[in-house]
Length: 377
Image (tube, rainbow, N blue to C red; front, side):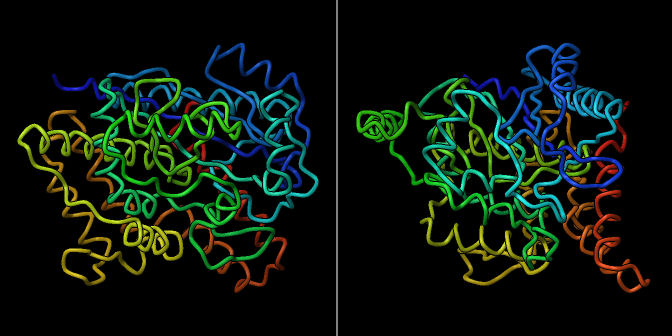
């Protein structure tokens, strides 16, 4: 039977003060409570108090997922505005410092802070997670093994973290550099079956290292809570429509691989040595310098690789009714990601005579506006 391929999207936002443009270290509890009242069970605190997380319901269609995400972004932005705050959909803040930030006082987060130490306190970063419903355990593992090849391509489409503490880090996704200080991150190994995956998880559980598989923070993983495959590699997209495009493309890639599987065909497996190289290139350059085509052994422009993916998934985009959404990757290629725009605003502001802080403030102002573009607030 074909999996349900249901869709769920989680996003994390940073909360900023509209006047100072800086991160809000200690947002009012009433703000979060109001958000949770307006969207019960869908808006949550994150590890740091300056963050807030939203999650859509289980969606059967992409249009439903977009409506859900727009409503949730609008809810957070509308409530935050009443307190002089705003959410930004960016994976790092352009200039805020991590040292003053406070973590949320919950058992899970207190344990993380204790176990991980300083790297946990540096987690002033945000991402986007996309869940796709795949009910069969072994199929979930098989598709995870195969779709790893395409994850750097998705990362390149989403980069939104070029700055850290006021500096251009010369990486389109500096978020991953911060994230890599934690254990159990990066690209997962290939597993032969769900049973083999569970055996490895059980070793860590018996050793007292983790309580369950939710502490595996890989770029992609079988969800511990849901019968889904959860893609976690991407930065958060500042534009809502970009997030929907990437979620649609991930869903189509999984169905394409499933179609091959029922014909007893599998995507050629590659070692993490190669996949991690493309991951680094996407992190460093985004869409600008291409990725390696492993079969040909050459670096190919991202535009060419994404056109190949559109061809591979054309049948699946038709099946899900999302041809318009997935082909928006061409628009992202043409104008660049959030990281490109942030760097350009900063550079242009400096060239126009702004000082360093003013230039960074203009980046934050753009992020505030772009986060709610096309969103009812």
